[in-house]
Amino acid sequence: MGKTFNFGAGPAKIPEAVMEKAQKEFLNYNGTTGISVLEMSHRSSDFGNIVSSTKKLLRDEMQIPGNYEILLLHGGGTGQFAGIPLNLRAFSKNSESPTADYAVTGSWSNGAAKEAEKYLTVKKVFDAKAPFLGAPIGNTWKRDPDAAYLYYCSNETIHGVEFPHAPETLPDIPLVADVSSNVLSRNFDFTNHGVVFCGTQKNLGAAGLTIAIVREDLIGKHHPFTPAILSYDEMHKNNSLFNTPSTYSIYLTHLVLEWIRDIGGVKKLEELNAQKSQLLYETIDNSGNFFVNNVQKDFRSRMNIPFHVGSVEGKPELEAEFLKKATAAGMIGLKGHRSVGGIRASIYNSVTMEETQKLVDFMKFFQSSHS
Ligand code: PMP
Image 1 (cartoon, rainbow, N blue to C red):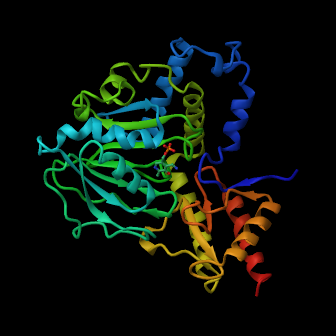
Image 2: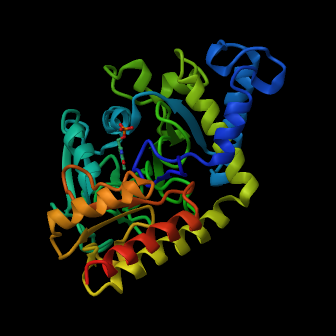
Image 3: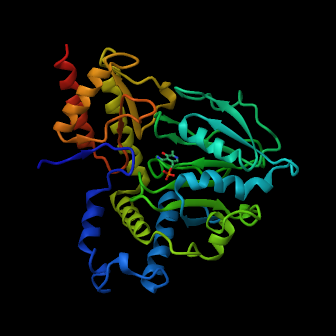
């Protein structure tokens, strides 16, 4: 069997070097313990070292300021959709009926807003509505001065809409960012942020671990009904070991962070991601509308690139043929999300320039065979 090229949106490709290291020490972690990380107590000193080293590497590689705590959690991004309002609602200036602002730029921020409605009053400062093609960032947003926070999704994985930079916020109102699908893909500025969270199954390893980076002054005012595993306070007090964490996922994230450090850090990844996405968008834009990406140019994602084949809305039979031939050529994971159809190429940190070039060559060949 030839090489498989994985352009899936997540769980996604993990760098080869990470997989090889994990394989090498699968049965005997560190070559000295005689057991696998899978078999190790989360209270053991070996695992304790993995936890502290993972946090240190994340702090270094993401340049997380000292007044933020790193929490290793459960429940995925979806867990945080509830965790955020539960932990932060007390910061609304409206204590009778707490509110929070949400910028809706795609399915994930929409889902977060919907979940938050169970716990507070959600005000949508911006509601792009499907097909979610972008967002004006800034002065046109009508913000609520009482809001506990302003929520945004820095990269909408399904619609391929990415904020070029964080939105502005009002003084004293922290930003909350869902960085699930673009964490560590470029420099991240923590200014004004209260909580930055992600699942690890795209740019940071396997599914099962959720990371929340929380400004320390926002910890400790959670709603009394907050489940312990969603409470930033409980998790922080217990060094993220309140209960059994997803040990193997933490270990894999540790390996991915070492890989990021060793290849030159976020700066290097940012350069590579710019080159890869530019190559793909150029191929789309120069195809004379054979391939079409409808997202506003300033908001085009560098990680998830959705496009249609044959016309602006796409021709279903051509798209099916595209997927079939791509699969035959070893390229998988290219089917667009079931809610939007079409094609989506996810080119996370782990996807190389050569792999991106392979996809582009295939796209050009496919187009030439239909003209
Ligand atoms: N936010 C974003 C941007 C996502 O892409 C996803 C999942 N793909 C989620 C949240 C939900 O994450 P999970 O499946 O880990 O709950």
